[in-house]
Image (cartoon, rainbow, N blue to C red):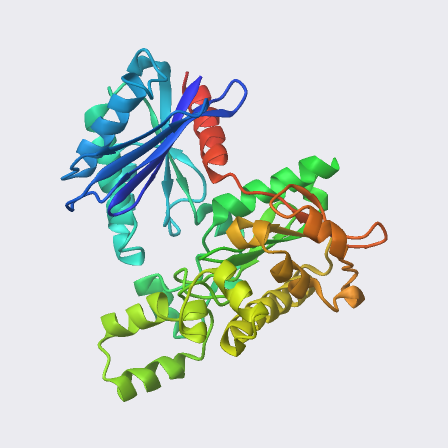
Length: 402
């Protein structure tokens, strides 16, 4: 069984073709600059063939047509016939309270995803376009499945997701904590439990998905009970260009002082803050660490803010769960930044967390335990694989309808 996994943005369409017999990636790629000039497809096969082609993508339909073309023809060919694709799995950012699990795509499902576009205006409209385009390019006999970033967090209790604004705002405007990166948090927590040979239902885990966008989740018995991102992916720890959690009054204060419109304020908090805003020159953790090592005070401050923020969430979520068995790091920074992991776990022995400094360095970019043998709380690096989880969910759902 071969499953095509799609991650569509407003101007891009990333894809992976996965063989579910052994779960290896057959090919992957990205269609860039959809709806703009200078479109390009980048395609790479498992045996190392790389193709980059300049081509225009007026809409997502043309992007789908091109990716099918490179899968079937030329140097990057990996399929003899389109019928070899058993199903298509789509990543969807926002499912709100309408979806608590992955589902088979129907017209009703597409309409529901579209109906909550105002909760994810940069993502859900693009997802709908991709779903429609996929229907045009693939035969209707090829089932599609949607997997939601927010679904994993639908187990968060009301006292953890409700904001302290009038309750009518939740009822009328759906104002609540949704959480994101759910597919990643679900994958790495399940993978960790499998690696140590434990039933996830018996574990209390804090997963730290750290990258240009970062979120931290408390997982008790395999279920999300709280998470750092909120109504949008802006909340939580400091990120590449996002501010993380701040006093709401500061937003109003800065809007008045700078004369910002709501759109300008949103751009300021989402695109000009975080690492970039504090350091003044970069949103990249690698650049932050390099500059900090060279004595750049603002880069040092940016790194300190992130590490301190992670540490606070670990403490808070340990209290929320009434204990802790493991901290799992994942994502671009979580998997690759030994200093961030060390700083987040520093002086946490009172919670039972003892990091092994040498393992932390040696296992950078790898999968494995980085805590000491006598650490009561296990600390691990588990590389995320959201595409594989989407493919697994897709396979499970289509097997049920056969």
